[in-house]
Every structure is written in C-alpha cells, then in structure tokens.
Length: 377
Image (tube, rainbow, N blue to C red; front, side, top):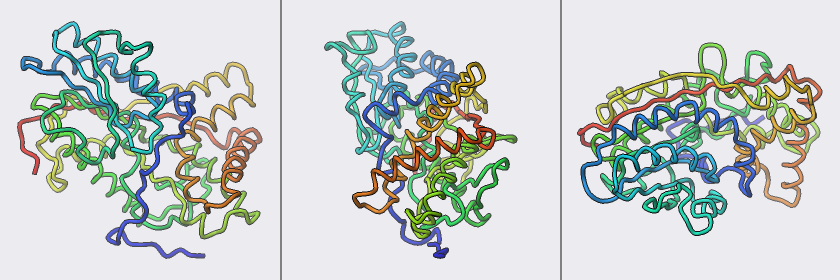
C-alpha cells in the first residue's frame, strides 16, 4: 500500500477545482436539494437588497459565485433584483461566475430567452465570469451584493496527495463506518477550509463597496449529522467494489478523494473575526444560521416506496457534483468512461439492496454580512 502523503507544506498536488459540475443539463436536473437549501435563506437576500446603499450613479452589480449551469443562480438572484427595481431606476447587472471549465451553455441560453432578460426587466443586464472564487474576479469597489450557494464547500486545492482510508476528508458516517481518516489528515483539511473562507472574504472585500452585502451559504454539519453522511459512504463502497475486482488499483483508490469539506456554523463564521487569517474586520456579521432541509427524494420514497426511483434520484444527485473529480482520478484510457458508468450503477445496486445503510440528511450553514470600511491587507 502506498500510504505516503505529502505534508501540507509541500507543493500542492493537482488543483482541486479545475472542473465544474457535470454539464449538459445534468446538474440543473439533479440539484433540487441544493435549491431547497438556497431557498431557505433567500429572505436574508431580500433583506440585504433592501439595505444596500444605492445613492451613487452607475449600475448596481450583483454576483453569484459558483453558478454552475445557472438554474439555481438565476432563481436566487431574481429575489434581490425584484426588490431593487422597486427602489431605484439605476441599471442592474447580474454576474454569474464559475470555473472556466464549467458548462456555461445552459446558463447563457437561459439569461436572455427570446432576446429579453430572464429577470423580466429592461434595465437588467447579465454576464458570466470564468475563474476561481478564491481569486479577485471583479474590479475594486464594483460590486454591491455577492452570494455563493453550496460552492465554497469545494476546497481550493488538494492539500495532501493521498487519503488511503476513505474518499472524503470528514470521514465516514457513524452509521456505516466503512473507512477512516486520521486525525492528522482531518486537521489538515480543517485548516485549509479555514484559510479558504478567509481567502474568499478578502477577494470579495476588494470587490464590494462599503456597505455591500455578502451571503455565504454551504452544505455542512451540526452536532448530530453531516451532509456527507450516506452519499459518500455509498460512493466509497461502490468504488471499493472495483478495487476488489482489480478494475481500480489500490494506488488509484488512495490518491482519489473528493476535495470537499463539511463545515459547522462556527467553522463558517470563525474566519470573519479571527485575526490570524487576515480577514478580521473586513465584514460585520449580521446573521448566522445552521438549519436542515427536507430532502425531496427522501420524501418521495417515504410516500411511494418506489425503490428504483429513489436509488436513481439519490445517486444522480451526488453524481452531479462528484463525477468530474472521480473521472479525473481514474487512468485516462479507453475504459474510463465505461468504468465511471459502472461505478454509479454499482452505487444504485448497493442502495437498492440496503437503503438503510445510507441514510442522507441535508444540513446547511449560512451567514449574511456587511462590508465595512476596513482596508484589505
């Protein structure tokens, strides 16, 4: 077994976020739980729009970082847009940003259906920006409202080369207990997650005007559950089936992990005030909340007991945001596409055989904050 890992101080391995979500409309079709988690905090977004400083001239700019194919991004930004058009005649610009490798095609087709703004107002203009949300992507002081929904859980890089006992940094659920992540490795990921929040805050602080608003929301964990429970247990079990039959080598399994971290509310908000991370004082924390949403495919299964549909919906849900990393971790040969399909089909089979082994709950954390006058160092 090749359990040797690079220390966190070593040169970073391949960047964790070089690929967007599964495209071709697949993410849009399988992201209802993400939308439900977003919708739960949109009242905060409307309150933020009502409080924005809009006395100056020029466009009012709203940006969503991590827009994917755009269905949820458009629906979310429509809420502050509808409030702002009641407050001002100034033009409004919506900016939808994701990685350059994101499938922007669906988004671009959706922003101006039939030659008109999807937001239903003649003075609303939209654009897309490709780039990492951990970088500054917009000019200094050009942005009034920034959002990110479910995206900042994806880490900026892979801090260690291998994770030999499981495919996810937080480790397996207590229910399944089908692997391990050492305390040392968990600490490395926890620290990177803290740094990523601070890096994101500093980038947005440069872009936002004083008094501008930032709504930060992401899947996470609380005292009783984590959003990684169940879904990554299932994916890990499915991958291991192909390790056991020799289709995937032990070395490939140990080098493959999803560069994602589930934060508690304290881990989300801590960098806002922690002087050691360099972002303290840039934002005033207005509201912070941890909450759980009902999961649509869980509720349907409880009502109709259709195991086939449940398994397909459950697996397609996590396939939409895990497939790109899994694919890139496998050897680039003629069998890779087939192997990817087989892994997700195996996950469906495992879930149908024992659904009680993979219970899934959706925990989310969110924070609304206001840009202060402090300078970014």
